[in-house]
Amino acid sequence: MDPLQLSMIFRLMVASALGGVLGFEREYVGKSAGLRTYTLVSFGAALFTILSDEGLRGYLGITSFDPSRIISQIIVGVGFIGGGLIIFQEKENRVHGLTTAAGLWAVAAIGCAVGLEYYSIATFSTIFILVLLSGTRYFNIEQRIHKMSGNTEKDDNNA
Image 1 (cartoon, rainbow, N blue to C red):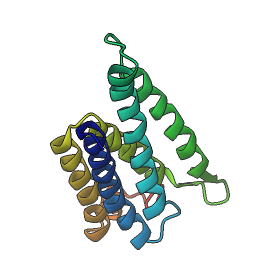
Image 2 (cartoon, one colour):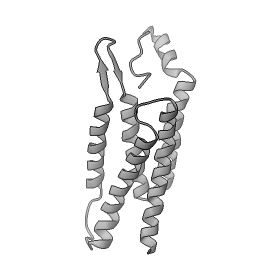
Image 3 (cartoon, rainbow, N blue to C red):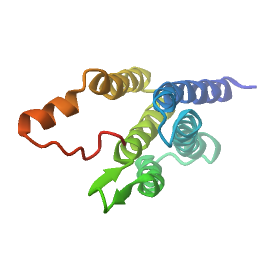
Image 4 (cartoon, rainbow, N blue to C red):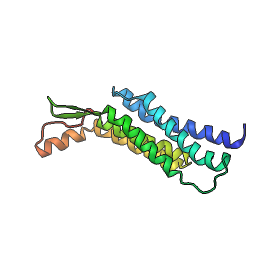
């Protein structure tokens, strides 16, 4: 195996690991999209990004191209998946799944970052999102905000 392919495999492993960290958190709290989904979305985004970047340049010999075109399509595709997770419950006047959909969208961006070898940005983003998801739940931040505002209804706390 040549060094370029080893580099690609390494990037896919890193993307899977970072997506898996966030997926584990979602799985642990019992959300509809968990470990496998987050890992697959991050892996897939990285793979499409790598194939777009390396494949066009290295294997097809195309020297001038815009890899952001593939990334924009990843955003649209993951948005479609996320849209399927969002449910409005009219009886309760609540939205469910919005945080999970946003998490999938963000993990796709992490996969793209890894695919382009932006490891520190991808790692920082993973840690930031993990702290955001678990920290707001642990410290009941959203519930405290609702209490302060006098709004006792939850809109996306269980997403």
